[in-house]
Image (tube, rainbow, N blue to C red):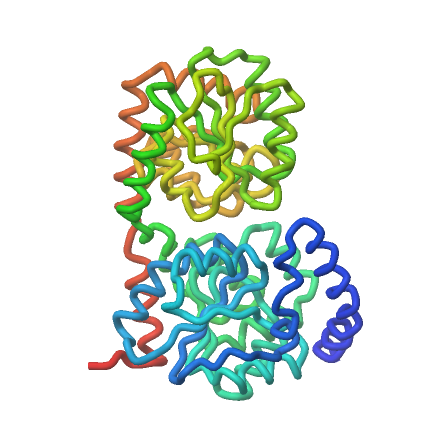
Length: 420
């Protein structure tokens, strides 16, 4: 009965979903495209056999990089199908993988939409990146004897409480998965408490993402464009954080030569953040203008996608956004891997294990608010010894935790033996 009520609720919410797409399309027109896919109607023809990976948005798509590379090497005769829920996730997969994989939207979790999706693509296995449980999807895969694995799973206390509001649905979905691997012991414990019968702990595949050489080359080019000025990068910032940072930056009065660089998490907010900068009377320059940085530029806006490694490499100190306000923190592993000192705010539930590990290793420093953030950034920009120490610690921290992809591949081979 619980599953029936869930399905009826999903059906009832479909008109709202359409309105939501229209609402999001006001700022992101890509939400108007590929509507049929959201209801299980597809034009794309993907040759079988197929390995299907679900990566909701940008973070999950980027995390899938090392796993997709390993899958291509182990299963060269399989085609990779990547499904998303957001246009930014889809655009990220285009930037990262081009036409070497297929990509579509996963349909809304109606029984008929799920059946159409599975019937059209006929995947040999399904891999859900991180944690997104759709009861009808999981149940249909089980009915059709399609192994569906939850890999690189992370589950914060907040998300666990949300899933815990629907204990029967959550328990049923978790027990019908073919296998589950989590990034840390805390995530595994929460999944078990919700009903997962067995959870392996493999670490995060995000540690296996090595900085692409072309991104490091671009980072050096960006640095040449900036010149000798010290650079404080605020990367993947979220709504409300930029205003706090800008106000603190102006109040503390970081030295006239220091450059504040801001790269918002979502591209639809580029113009909004530019407006925040202009409203404070700060001189703004955009990454997209492809010009050398002017001497009087105070804030550099990173209005591009797919270049985060390059931004990290071009900076002296990085603040990882989503941590100053309660968004749970974005990926702090990437700047560590590049060897750039990291600052994070108080909210880290999305990367709790990585945040604790980076702080303990001396690769990151945690601050409590925007004023502390700017004060700490100013101190680091002026201290080459501490910067170098943190840079070395970050590289060591990132390299020491690699190997989750290899462990995940061993799990997958239990369901699809690698070609010999």
